[in-house]
Length: 108
Ligand code: SF4
Ligand code: SF4
Image (cartoon, rainbow, N blue to C red; front, side, top):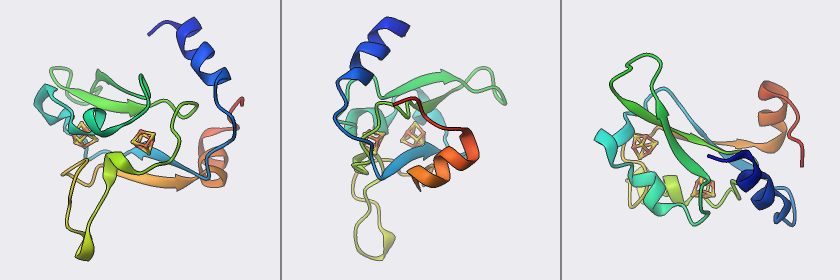
């Protein structure tokens, strides 16, 4: 992913999101066909990387500067049944404050 392309998109953001998607260790990469990426409405926000714990598999990461916190990648129905998005409960929604406390301030 070109840095210039990401920077350009970041500059298009109008305001900070209240929550952000964070991929947890349950991500399987969906066998190379990540469902979450098909649900995310923001181009380039979710992307595949090599899984450092299993080099033959990919996992997904979220660009925190592009995520708008819409939860479409992880939407759940009543009783926590999965409707769309990640079927493996591999996406957590963090508050921006939690994100910046744990991972550092984001350069908006
Ligand atoms: S919360 Fe929305 S914008 Fe963020 S990664 Fe999930 S689908 Fe994409
Ligand atoms: S976050 Fe969930 S839907 Fe996305 S690749 Fe990982 S396991 Fe699949």
